[in-house]
Amino acid sequence: MNITIIGLGLIGGSIAAALKQQQPAVTLTAYDKKLAALKYAKQKTLIDHYTNNIGTAISKAEIIIIAVPIHAYTTVLREIGKYITTAQIITDVGSVKNTTIAIARRELKNNIAQFVPGHPIAGSEKAGIANAQSDLFMQRQVILTPTAKTNPRAITKITNLWQSLEATVTIMPPNKHDKILAATSHLPHVISYAYQNIFTRRKNITKYAANSFKDMTRIAKSNPKIWADIFLANSKAVLTEIKKFKQQLVLLETSIHNLNNQKLEKLL
Amino acid sequence: MNITIIGLGLIGGSIAAALKQQQPAVTLTAYDKKLAALKYAKQKTLIDHYTNNIGTAISKAEIIIIAVPIHAYTTVLREIGKYITTAQIITDVGSVKNTTIAIARRELKNNIAQFVPGHPIAGSEKAGIANAQSDLFMQRQVILTPTAKTNPRAITKITNLWQSLEATVTIMPPNKHDKILAATSHLPHVISYAYQNIFTRRKNITKYAANSFKDMTRIAKSNPKIWADIFLANSKAVLTEIKKFKQQLVLLETSIHNLNNQKLEKLL
Image 1 (cartoon, rainbow over the protein chains, first blue to last red):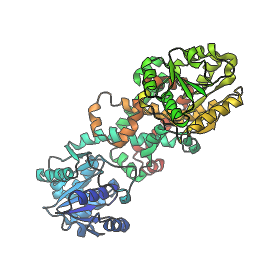
Image 2: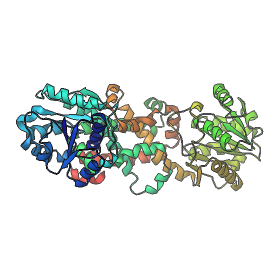
Image 3: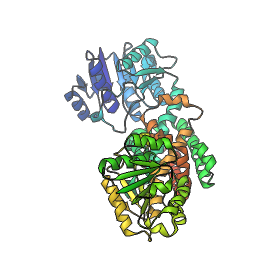
Image 4: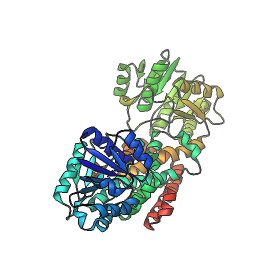
């Protein structure tokens, strides 16, 4: 089987590493804007072939995996749309689904049934192929969000692909995915960035910090461009969750302000 | 040397374990309200003697270490105040210093010069002696916050004690300590509890959570009574930090609401 990965960052690179380990018979081709990432992957034998032309990259692929940041979707899917044939299946790993599905619909047009929207719930604050891990998806959830138009056989193929990497596949509507992830992943990132920003002019005091500080700031080391994309692509659900969080924060704040031990303990 | 530990929870227990490892010549006596904690520590040879009477516990001690929750300070210090002699040194491990110093001043009266207020910046969401670790303070900061009245020789003795457990000792005013810890430790706990509370009626969705969720909720598993105490004992500084955090949160919220990618990226 031929699989092509478009975008060799942390996720694309980890898929390559995992496939090479779990499915050594697969022939892997990769495309990335950065030649250095492609050369690195080839040298580490994470991929078999690489090219800086998307048309060439996908020409023999049975499955095309899109693993680029949200802001690159339009460019990448437009190129794929030019060359795609009806026998090929496309999937992605984007952290938001409504927005990415809308782009895919616009760019793939009549081939949209071949697109299986996906999102592995795995990652790290460390970006780039140099941090790729072959076990990144093991015992992790992968959510697929097919639409009414998605070809059922394509869904099965992508399900099998993720299961071969030891991930657990769940299928749900894109809307549900975006609401859940706004609460469980996007909001924690908003909070972590906001918390980190209170130290902008007093970094010196963070030397007295322990584990609670480390946990609270780890994900604020994530790539700002990638996360600005995600927050804006899922803005409605993210704003809803920020509102809920602020309400809970104000409840705690009020109890502390009123020195109301009983109420405070109950909230904790 | 005889050392007495008042309160055998995670911190008191870890001090016992660390002392037994680093200073085996020390004779350790412990007091705790809970007989089970004392018996456990004795059985694990973390302490040499135990008693449920504070007067007896401290009678031979050169150094008395108070490791009880904030709400127990008055009771414990009143008992110590009854039996303390001028040759003995007292220290504590409380997470807030202004409030605990005020209690010590009230209860120890003329013996206040013998009290060296302290706070090891180490801990865990896991409470209790069963989670004690002999390496909890290694390569960690311990902040001492003596007042103008504190006996310099007492400060030196407590500094040496912590250094023997491989901790780094820093001395600063209690006010400064409370402001720094409000930002680096107390606020993260407030945030974690507030974040956790948005899932109260939808725990089912947390199964799709990854590391960002785990990091954001870990410290909300801490003991509610202990943390309600801390938030209230340091309420002014904690409220100041909550306000700063809310300002940063609103900046992010506004950029997301306005779909202002440039501003958002800058904030991240």
